[in-house]
Length: 283
Length: 258
Image (cartoon, rainbow over all chains, first blue to last red; front, side, top):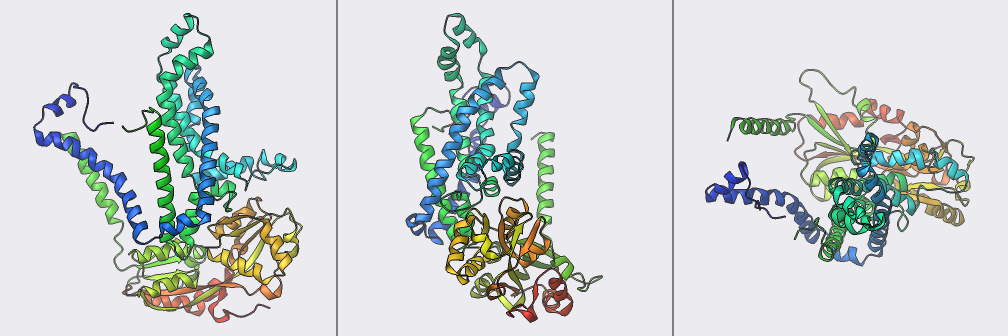
């Protein structure tokens, strides 16, 4: 994504290009200032961690690594489930002609609106020990709350819609005539999907996957309510950060762990962007 | 700039001014109080002088750690009601404290979910029982670990093995029992008094006096009405309201319960 418009358009775009130098520079500076709005707080966090906190001590602490490992494991599992189960769902919803499909697609956006703590309560009403499905399951000796599986479920519920939404938009925007043409040329439906549709929507899927994984990694409220917070089993990095905030070291400790989480996510996202041509990547 | 853009900018500026205006609390006494006081504090200060000329009281509730951090970061506060001594000590070390006093005590209690057959703490040490406690970093969690340490080693071992969650706030700990997710929760007496779908499990006499001490802090350069409120909160009327909510009044702090 470059800051300056790439195409000479009509109207305001053309006028912006024809404007004197000062205005044209403002056209770049204003977006750059907006970008700083996101970057500066992250730099502030880093600076605070380096001055007040002890990032080195947190990096050497096995508790931090336990939480980080659990976070990466659960967020990745949540993403895998979102991709495996969400891609067909998004495809069906985007290509179905029924008006119900559109209603369903809207309903699936709703977890994005819910405060995560409410999402956690909602999960408990169904899968909790006293929940509609959880109670019979509990009777059968299967209990979900306070397990690592519950962490994955909470993350999937909160972060999955980001993937669904993005995949849905991709499938909806893909021109069905390409697939139709391939199909009439004799490709099987599966080959058509794999060779024609998938390359068309790949950018949307990859972008949605990055959003979903990142959101799952940062998930806090739903996880706390539904899965609890026990080191090694359900305490993910965000929960460890909240616990650290309550410790005597307080802010300093919380900031130090936060920087490790942000740094790790940054490294991984850069790697992903480097090795995929996801248009979600800023090049 | 056309008229529409100008209109939008004017609206935006107006919104910004309104938002800034919300901070305008001239003369008000700003009370930062631990979340556990949220239900009782309005009743406790109800008898404080009101009417013309009396300062307005503005309450902000939160975890003591969070509030202390906010105050240290420059948040405007006149009184701070900390749920533990450590956070008051943090402010003292920074030189922000004008005076402080023990406000009250909150004793540790065990809530068991309705339908549970447990009658003694030993019953909670059996395999398969689910126990919710506070994280070691939060006061109720630290107190719970003190209690575990004071029990017979085999009971303590069983209890520790049964812990399914270490929550960052006592309200969350209590919710585990209210929602039926956990069988028992280690909370404060006052939480138990307000709990739904839960009952108290008596503690052995040796550990029944374990309590958390709340500290009342008047900050330096507090607004003029703060001193009177400080004294009122330690007075008989406010202390009676605290006792009614399940707290131990300052006068009986440190005593072993009957």
